[in-house]
Length: 132
Image 1 (cartoon, one colour):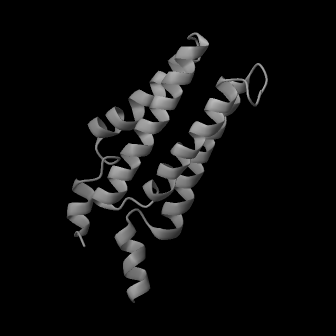
Image 2: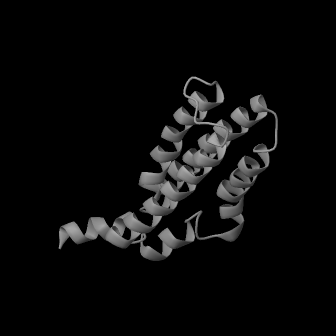
Image 3: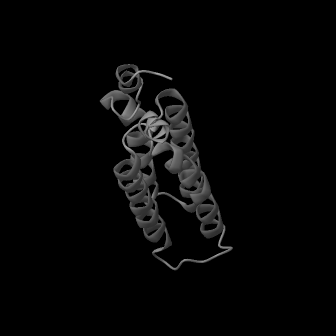
């Protein structure tokens, strides 16, 4: 198990440059895609969610960041409603993309805050709690 110092050093969320690359740019692309033609919106949102989910998987494995264990699958699951709405299989109304953006933003925020409040910033902290 990595020490706390090593864990913090390898945390992609804790480093401004890696945070912007792995989460800031995809979120910015998703917002910009709200003004793009539909095929581009679907492609950008799907790619951005997959990118962020993969980054969370890498971060969970690399440093054990607690919320990443929850946000990674959340990002991958949110691809489903994006595709369903994008291809008009499930119509969410004229503001559907906004509703999806709100759901993704609020879901991510809630998962981040709640899981780290309950179990600490790094998985090692809740793993060590079980050992005590």
